[in-house]
Image 1 (tube, helix red, strand yellow):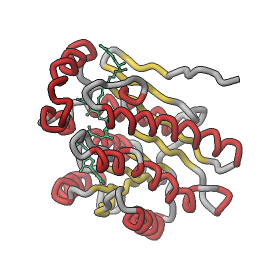
Image 2 (cartoon, protein in one colour):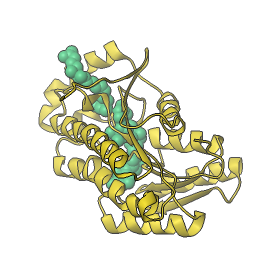
Image 3 (cartoon, rainbow, N blue to C red):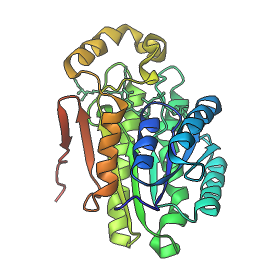
Image 4 (tube, rainbow, N blue to C red):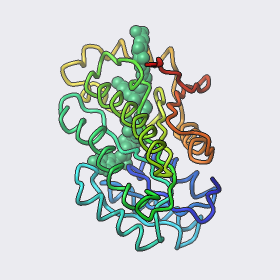
Length: 257
Ligand SMILES: NC(=O)c1ccc[n+]([C@@H]2O[C@H](COP(=O)([O-])OP(=O)(O)OC[C@H]3O[C@@H](n4cnc5c(N)ncnc54)[C@H](O)[C@@H]3O)[C@@H](O)[C@H]2O)c1
Ligand SMILES: CCCCC[C@H](O)CC\C=C/C=C/C=C/[C@@H](O)[C@@H](O)CCCC(=O)O
């Protein structure tokens, strides 16, 4: 996929990995709609991006992925402004084992809400142009992270949902590719105040810290480069790409046949 002239929507775009995804898509010619709840960070980023890429290739819309209504409104505004949606990066996510229902609502249900709301605009069977969706899971979506069981569950859910949507799309003729990234630790604010975020499992912070020492820390840009690969390589559908500082690996799952 050539990105020039394409329209992308990125959730959780104001900071961290979402900001890096936004930047690499803009650098490669796409128009990008930034969705986030952090208006201050988003508007500051938007000002910088417009200085670099011009006034007419970006749009920020305040959108909480916990709200189907806000997601649908954001997608409608995107289509009205840029004519359609070609790329969707469902990236918004939190770590909060104390408020675990909120974690589920954002990390898993938010991805489902956004994916389903995008269908009416992207699905070739309903007048869409087709395209690609890349969801942000985690290495914790491939194996259990003992200090955050609910976060782990949400990310396992994102991996499974993405792979099922990829198969459904291929079988139905939607013309949409679905892929998921599974990064290890990335230097963003998600890793701040970890003790508080682990809630009843904060006593296991040291075990997780040992994992950080083993795996190392990625930069958001390294992760965004992998998203770019999944967006542009039109052979990729149903892929789970594990990303860690020493490299990356496309995951092979057990065959059920
Ligand atoms: N940082 C890591 O170690 C790491 C590793 C693997 C995967 N991830 C995943 O990457 C994604 C991005 O996280 P990050 O590390 O960049 O963290 P971050 O906190 O820097 O950025 C998250 C962004 O999402 C936004 N957001 C939060 N809740 C939202 C909501 N309800 N609706 C819309 N936007 C919302 C925040 O405002 C923020 O801009 C998350 O899904 C996270 O689980 C992070
Ligand atoms: C508390 C920080 C949470 C950060 C969550 C981010 O999504 C980053 C997750 C990064 C790495 C996750 C690793 C998961 C590993 C599992 O596969 C587990 O099986 C590894 C077990 C290792 C061990 O037992 O030593």
